[in-house]
Length: 267
Image (cartoon, rainbow, N blue to C red):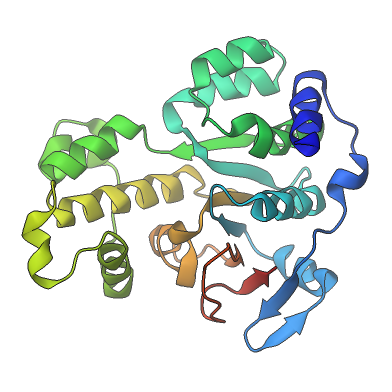
């Protein structure tokens, strides 16, 4: 609770560049394959790639601490921040807020932030603002994903952005994990309220839009871990010349596997 209050106050009044104890290394062990590594070894590798994905469980406090810590080490003139938590149609307002052209209240009113934005994500944005980094509103507007989940690709047939978007859905392992997560197995598929494959198409749409939003950009990308686990999801949709590494903060109840990410952080 105390940490949430500090963050809420800081986000409305600005933060110091060091941010004191909030930016110290959080607890946890960093795994790279079958080995453990130090923070410095991980950061040395992360600094070399175009995109650093940090995958989280959205309600995991430890994941949010690691995101802030990693961002505090990577944020700078040559690296921006990309967030699943904002949708592409609020990019203009987000840019205006970072430039000081709209107030905090105006920004929150118009940007449709997630319910846990203030305790869990606003500090990332404020640190980006302080260091002059752009913040990319990466996710597809939710009504488009909802349309696809209900009606398939045909629901976007008249949308110009979709005609220009490339969606790669060839990763069968990703599809199978998604359907398994949705509880779709064998004969149960017909019992789902929506076509499971249309739900998967909506997921692929999100991945493709998020990948498109960072084309040619060096950034740290904070997303739900399913979007980057096993170097799939958004990673599948990146252009071939984009170098990237993935970080996974293992949440409570999640089983560890070295294949989950290039760096898996366990409590």
